[in-house]
Amino acid sequence: MGRTPCCDKSNVKKGLWTAEEDAKILAYVSEHGTSNWTSAPRKAGLKRCGKSCRLRWTNYLRPDLKHDRLTPEEEMLIINLHAVIGSRWSQIAAHLPGRTDNDVKNYWNTKLKKKLLEMGIDPVTHKPFSQILTDYENIAHFPKAITQIGSFNRDLRNTFMSKPEVSSALEVNLSSLLSHSMVAMRTPMMESVQDGLINGERSNNNCSWDLQYQLQAMGLFKEATNCTNLETFHPHFFSEGSSSSSSSTATAMQVTWPIPFACEEQSLLQTTPGPPISWNEFFLKDAFLPLDQQQWQEQQDIQGLLSTGSSSEIQVHDEIQKIELIDEGNKNYTVEQVGYDPFTDIGKSYPGTVGDEAGKIFEGSLCPNDSFMESIFDQDNQISWEFPSNLGEPF
DNA sequence: AATTTGGCCAACCGCCCAAGC
DNA sequence: CGCTTGGGCGGTTGGCCAAAT
Image 1 (cartoon, protein in one colour):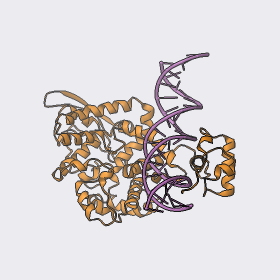
Image 2 (image 1 turned 90 degrees about the vertical axis):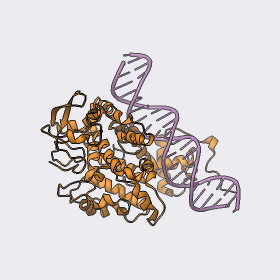
Image 3 (image 1 turned 120 degrees about the vertical axis):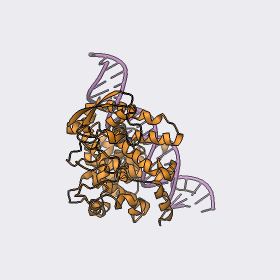
Image 4 (image 1 turned 60 degrees about the horizontal axis):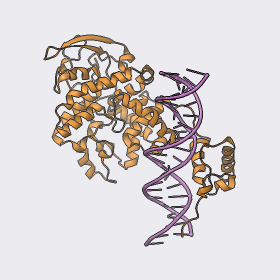
């Protein structure tokens, strides 16, 4: 013997709500509250299912809801949270005051997912497609895959750049999101804001919104997993790098997107108190990689980022130089080199990077190995980029 | 001007889990 | 203890509307 049905399913109205129905719901809530939706249709004089009434209230009529367009900051937060916890819309919406899970879900499906795709980023794993292809190659031992990365990224770039309205709207947001995935890993800055963010507060210091969202996302993950020490998850993430005010050397691990992870975390997790969790719930890569390929994988991470992250930067900084390169087969390439580092968007010049043009060169087999960047990225057409030991160091 | 196409988003569907009976 | 619903959630659909053809 269970409960009585909430409504007569054969006699309920469906479809869009009228203003009159909305008024009835509002009147019902003001009198009876929101604790019992089963009786709501009857008491409100509506031919709707109680569940439908609850949904109408939750997603539209609640007085605390915002009905305006999501802000760039909210976009950032959604992306970063999604990178950490996936499509748990209600949890994401809980960090966006005035937004519902439906809002977030719709915005993701109609806007953000598309934007990430156009940026060459897989919206599921939040990794550059080039890296996923590389991973695939690594799994399948498919030697040609890596040589196709360049054209793949070029196609993505062309798609992106052919839609100026998209790029103009995105260029700051997503490129800086990419870039700050590195900056965010500097320990002191992180420590200064981490606690407040995890507690849902905004920091008053000058660190970027992007960083705050990244940290907030980690805070959410921390909450979700009951892990009290994120450093346990990834010692590189917190212990490596340098002071936020210095420009000292970054490590290869610092550019992993969106948050560093490695096989070693799998073993760490086994000994971490709390509920059993796995990074593989969120990320796909490492489950397939042997431990001895970690260093190589870190390099692939960097290459993947560089090979997809520059479409917008070209417009952002407008500091384009042209250099000519001749590959091993005497094939000429003209490279539009941008004075901008896709990893850092803090107003400093990084003449040594070219973003996805690296993919173009890569495609041409100029340097078909992990050191290919060394011979390219320099404002005077000279080799100056020591990959990957000083990656991220400003000029 | 009429038609087609695509974006957007409100709302529905179906599943899961906790709790009532 | 098992059946059932309520509530919550994520996935999906369908209709509206503006832009494109």
